[in-house]
Amino acid sequence: MKQRKIILDCDPGHDDAIAIVLAGNHPNLELLGITVESGNQTLEKTGRNALHLVQYLKLNVPVCKGVPYPIIREVEVCDAIHGESGLDGFDFPQLEINYDQRPAIDFLIQTLTQSEEPITVVTTGPMTNLALAMRTNPKIIENIEEVVLMGGSFTNGNVSPAAEFNILCDPEAAYIVFTSGCKITMVGLDVTRNVLVYPEIIQRMEPIQTIASELFVKLMNVFNENQKKVFGWEGAPLHDPVTIAYLIDQTILTTKYVHTEIDISHGPSYGRTNCDLPNYLHLEPNTYVATGIDVEKFWQIIEAGLKRY
Ligand code: BDR
Ligand code: CA
Image (tube, rainbow, N blue to C red; front, side):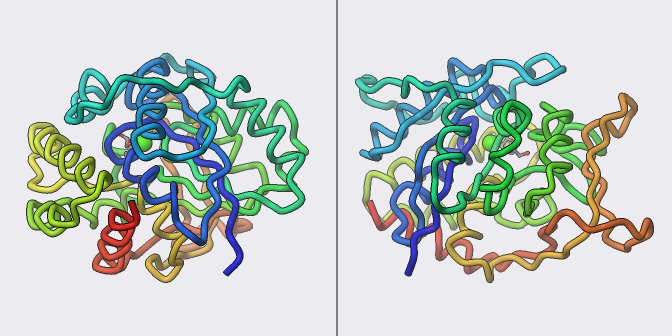
């Protein structure tokens, strides 16, 4: 099977970490690079976490540092869930690798303009890097096969009644991407809140005994504790890896192609992804919105991913 070329733009982050695990060595995916931005923690911390993950998992993938701030808003980190480091719960060996010399925006532009084949961009953090790359060189849009994002919700948000964290961190960036004309698949809270890392899931993955399963178990224990403190849930929603699992096996998601608009007005719904599922507005669809997920198939993909290390 032909490998699908992808770039992963992220803010690790416990669930971003597992997205990197899945994307790092799947035979159907070619991970061309990881770009990072602020989100779950400051850029310094998310960048460091990405480097740690790449080194620990022995991936041969460039890590490019993105912009430290959203386009308009101030940085707002999510330390209540991801901790002081952004990836609390695992002690990585001393860091011996460094960033690629190219800043994330240059990397995105260079890779997308020079590739003979279209590339899929997966975002599991705020969409700042991708939006700024699109504005800097709009030609890249032609060579994006698909943008698959973890973000948004057509029901409630998780940081305001209306908005999900990744979108609310940088609504203007999301607006730019959603109006770019690219094929967009939105993996929102509506589906990611169904894949909860209950203790039984941790027990299922523990006997795998690879470097990846060790990472999974330790990170998910802390992720669960924090999610319980903040949201009162027994199992943390493993949001970000759903994007990669979808690229591995598209049948895990049900999607609906609808018009979606990011609210960038500064009212109570700032950062909301308004997905017109009932087609009230009769506007041109622009987004494949995930509406359903095969939960067991998702865990099978995670299980197989942890075994591959
Ligand atoms: C998203 O917010 C972050 O905290 C997670 O990493 C995920 O990308 C969920 O709202
Ligand atoms: Ca994330």
